[in-house]
Image (tube, rainbow over all chains, first blue to last red; front, side, top):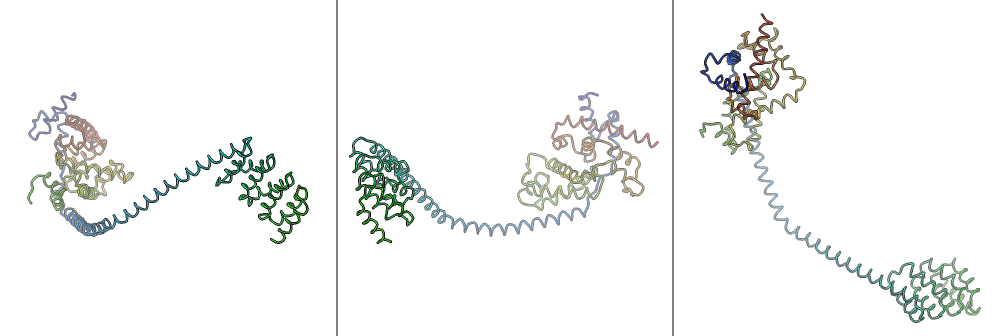
Length: 243
Length: 184
């Protein structure tokens, strides 16, 4: 039989009042299957399910009462919620504003510092001594001058032909003499000074910050400099007085 | 409350009137137990799986859609329950045929209604069928579902069900005559 015939045949076979003709082919086995005994209702199973269902319903009831209690707690939390959220939001807003303002301030300061540094380095390299002096003044206004500015000022103290420029450079570096690297560089420049005024100024700037170990080197440098022995003696006495 | 149809009852259960399930259970417990028994050849397992089916109906009552017949929906759940049971007990119930042989062995007293040789032969012939053929015969003949209901349960067309039932009957007939010949 092809599929179409099977479909028609099975349609007829399923009917309770099918003819004997239809019982051909698989009809016989179909009929035998109908002789299979059926399972009957089982009161024990019915009772078992009813009991289980009752327990489930009881569980639902219990869960509902717990749920109502949880709902009340949640409501209380929701009522308490806005004030804490508002406080948190306010703190967050303040923090954000502070960060933005601080960042803006830092950025502005950083930009200003960069401009000052650029201007300093430009002025320091000018031919005019007055402009170089202006450069040293600008250098002293830079809050956080970097090594390049310090190096330029040290170079000016060592080699600038103008005494006034060298003195101005020493004044610009004075706030940073506490830095041992700068101090060490300055000590080495004492003996190189042609001008005793510049050498003495260097000593006056260095000595208040010098360690006891550095005194020997400083006085050794003084003796090799243009500073008069009398002036050296005065400086030595000032140090002993300080000690 | 006196709803007549299964669908009405199930809708009430879905709406929260859970006691309606007791009535549905009483309507279908014999049918379901028969279905599971034909699949597993074990009365206790069949009873447990019937309970599990209604338990799942209870738990998933919200997923019931009134457009589908309750009976078809219930059998879909029953099929899944049986597949899950087979997966859990793989190795124990894997060999259905062995189960049937054991059931009809001398030491196992057969159920009173299965003393008939013909029924025993038929059951053994059923046991030799592949799972899909056996299932479609159980639904079509033992449970006496109509083709439309079976199509809905198996998720295929009505014509496809007819062809599948026919092929299963052919295979069963071969098995049966083979056993009958061997016995003779």
